[in-house]
Amino acid sequence: MINIKDNLDKIKAQIQQACQQSGRLIPYTEQVKQSLPVSLLAVSKTKPAALIEQAYLAGQHDFGENYLQEAVEKITQLAHLPELNWHFIGPIQANKTKQIARYFSWVHSVDREKIARRLNQHIQDDNCHNTPLNICLQVNISNEESKSGVAIDDILSLADIVNNCDKLTLRGLMAVPEKNAGNDCYEKMQQLFIQLQKHYPSVDTLSLGMSNDLPQAVAHGSTMVRIGSAIFGARTYKN
Ligand SMILES: *Cc1c(COP(=O)(O)O)cnc(C)c1O
Image (cartoon, rainbow, N blue to C red; front, side):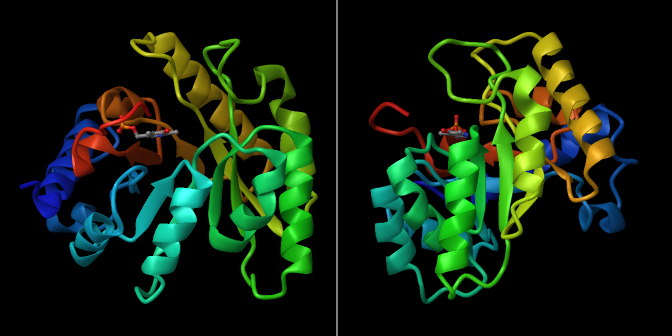
């Protein structure tokens, strides 16, 4: 049987090691253990609520989901757990923005103006949402035809739109580099992130790194890794 707590511990050790190797941490002490500069998002898509609850009981409070309908079912099932933060990380269709705004506290995959404006409008209309919605812009860093994400040249104008939406807080950038992408791709993301931070004081999040590229992402300034299969096991269907 899969041991979620062991897997979480292994990932945290891997983050710690990657931070040290890339000079982002002084060698291990109890003190730095408290302040890892990289947070862990557990990606629970396709996995049942019972496994998410196991991770929660092991101290994991941030979870990422890609598919809205599946996510809403699990969010509803786990509504009794306090301080659980849901992050939407999948492609966004405009007709899904209302539910995304209602159920999630973070959205990593905003890649066009229409989506930003609709999320902002829904929160305005939906009085129960009392904190700003945290937004990362998804960047099409590998410039792939098929991938979602804003083009590099359009990041700043989209950032400006999000920044001007009063129910949204611009937190940073997200990317899914293509498999076996070289370091230049990660360096570019790091530069874009630093550049965005100079423009907007609210920007503190570079959402980069998955089960297969965690060390590479951490070496290039990632502040949040999104880890699925290394925590919950391989998924049985695509994605
Ligand atoms: C599925 C997914 C992840 C997690 O991928 P793993 O390889 O299972 O760690 C991270 N980010 C996004 C956007 C995903 O769709």
